[in-house]
Image (cartoon, rainbow, N blue to C red; front, side, top):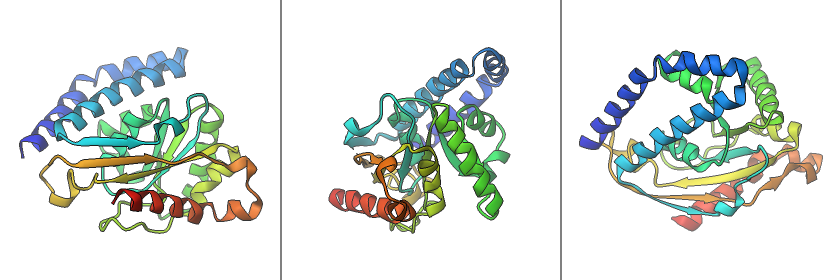
Length: 240
């Protein structure tokens, strides 16, 4: 439980000491949203790196050359653990917003930082909310901010991949951006598989080759979810 205690203590301290910092970031945003976003991004990544260090886990990354360096993209990953988000933010090279469930918007402190990190909140029971998220996420990509989505819709409790929601992929087809498939293994062994204890795990992250949506036919676009799921399933299988 020592690792768990240290992580929660770190997060508590971070939220407390950054309370006065949030208004400063908001003021900076009035003059330069990009500057505000980059400062918030750097701060959160630094905290996430400390959290990962505290877990004692080893992260093996394959395919890092597939990460984009000069363009916003749609990252697609499987989802087994809260640590997928932590590692995802450490992994991505530039500004990226995650799509999260709307319930997180009610968590004090966390909600403000998620907004500063360009996260979007989805009401999974509301179809209209989904359409609005697709539009907003597309606008983010057009403005240079990548989007990271777990298209299963929720964390897998068994490690088995659920169906990928095809609507998610409209973000890519509307903007013609590339899709970067990412496969996580071992993240649930850090926390979820023995809640509430945090234990070291050997985590693998496999970054697949970009999918160029601009080159896909309409028929291929309609089954992007199934295609991407197959790619990620194959990457996971090779690591198990």
